Length: 118
Length: 111
Image 1: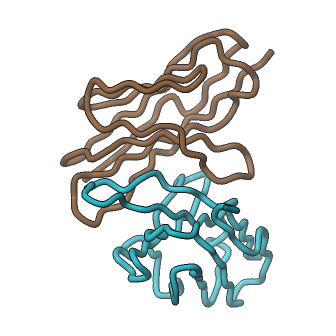
Image 2 (image 1 turned 90 degrees about the horizontal axis):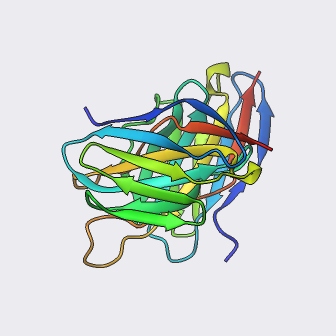
């Protein structure tokens, strides 16, 4: 398996523009997570899905952020309009929960998208 | 409020100089504690999962231990290739709750 795939790897845009980040999880995984990482705040969970359904979006900063998962093999995180304070590395991760267990298994992270908003 | 605190923020070691990284947590209940390694420019890579106090796991020069309030990542005789940021995360005992990550400890090992 190729692991979690994210695109683009780097994105530079101007304030006010729309940004779309993409993620392909590992086949067979039923959880998908979007994180944002900055030096100041570390790794923050934005939203996560289970079986393509959003479960917890309390980490989404504001209405400018939206995420979708139209099928089990694809998810997007959109920022519209983008602002300089959105500059960060955005990670997608996937995992699965073994039947009968309360805890999810370890998360596998993608390589991240480094977003710079000028 | 569930919280994860890692210390120190940064640690510099000489090759062969053993040490420990700390992860203290405050959660209503713990389903599991995870350790990850992150290299610059890459995503976190899974190392260990610990489920209950007293549990220990080892991998090469790394050993993770867990108590009811904290976890330690012991590094024995480190090498320069062990240089990375080590992240700790907890899975609280609440339905539907995802992992809570600490801010990490950045380890530098010089030869």
